[in-house]
Image 1 (tube, one colour):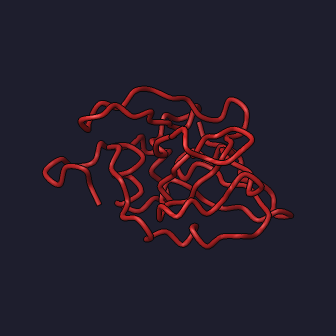
Image 2 (cartoon, rainbow, N blue to C red):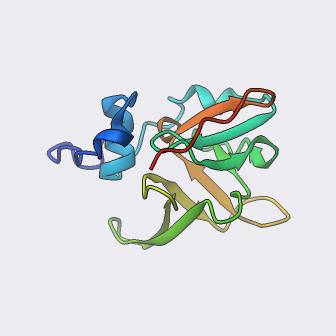
Image 3 (cartoon, one colour):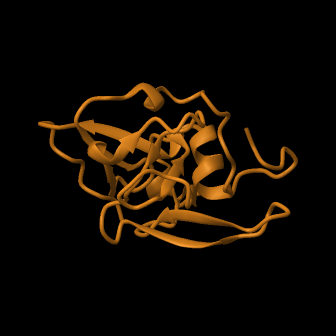
Length: 143
C-alpha cells in the first residue's frame, strides 16, 4: 500500500489520528496510495457527503461521485474551498495532488479526464474518506 515500503508513515497530530487505521495514516500523512479496488466506498451509492477521515471536513457530495473504472472512489467536483492542490513529482510525469484544505491530509490526485461539466476526475483514496449518509448529522470538524 505504501509508495515506499521502507518509509514509515509520518506521525499525524494526535487529535487527527484518533480513530484512524495505520493504512489511513499512511495515506493521509505519508502520501501513500491504497490498492485499487480495495475501498468499500467504490460501491457507495447512497445520497450523502464524503468527509476527510482525519479532520472530518466535508470534501465531496455524493452527487459528484461516479464510477471512473480506476478502482478508486472518483468525483468530478469537490465542495468549494474543500481541497487544495500542489504538483506531485514522485513519478516520471508530474501529477496534481490534492489534499484536505483544512488539515492537509493527502486525498489523491486530480486528472483532466473526467466527465462533464468539469472534465475533472478527483481520484481519491477511500481510506482518506468517511461517508455520512444524508439525514445523519455531519460530524463537527476537528482542528
